[in-house]
Amino acid sequence: MTEPEADDTEDATEAVWREIVENYGDRAVIEPAEEPLVEPTPRFDPADDVFDYDDALVGYEEPEDEGFVPPTPAPLPRVRPDRLAAWVGVLGSPAIVLVLLLSGLSVDPVIGWLLVAAFVGGFGYLVATMSPEPRDPWDDGAQL
Image (cartoon, rainbow, N blue to C red; front, side, top):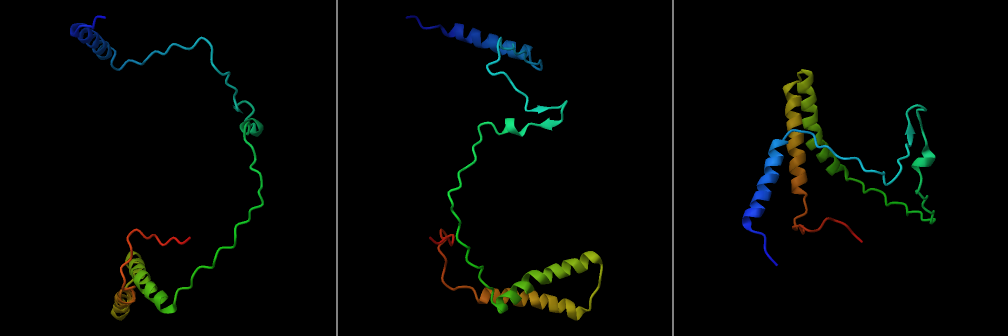
């Protein structure tokens, strides 16, 4: 068995690259197949402007109803009023300030300082009442 010489493979490679460079930018011509493998059937006929849903559902089977009814989910936990007030201060104060700035309304400086105090106080309360034990970084809170 003879191995091809390096010159033969280099010449073939050069010929392929030369052909690619010469035909750069030209559209590829694809020869159509003699016979299509599957006869295409249109599902949408523009002349009728009607979509045939029966053809679209060919092969679709309705899943059987197994009678499973999921249990009623547990009610959402209630937020304690003190934590709710802290969150309103942290999220509501900047929102009010932003609305006032965008609308061009001016308020009494006392109200402005109250908004700042609500933000700082709410943030401080939330930080002060955080759980002191460190949380496992891989714990996503899911319970089985």
